[in-house]
Image (cartoon, rainbow, N blue to C red; front, side, top):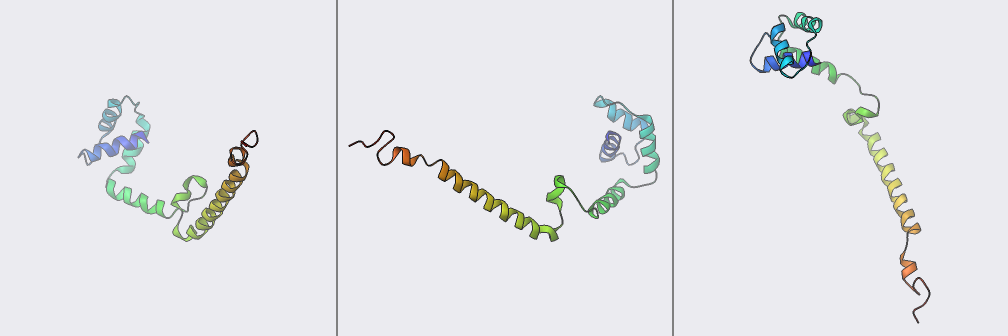
Length: 122
């Protein structure tokens, strides 16, 4: 990933066709080790390609991936919003129930209300 990042930094800096030395220089400037094999692989794969087109193609591919698992639940398609609303409603009801129980269990007003903690003040 760091090799790709260094390559993209070079491109953002105006170098439309970064070399292995360019990538190594960027990596070295932040104290990162340069893996020559990965750099050469990246450069061979990017040869004669525009980075903007490669990024756009990658975005299209990512958009077609259906997320699964809890870590990416916020990225789920709009069609599943009904299920999310049901879940949110169930969670809200659960919270209300917990609040009601807390009010019943933690009602300290009776202790200090009529008669006080030690009985009537009369």
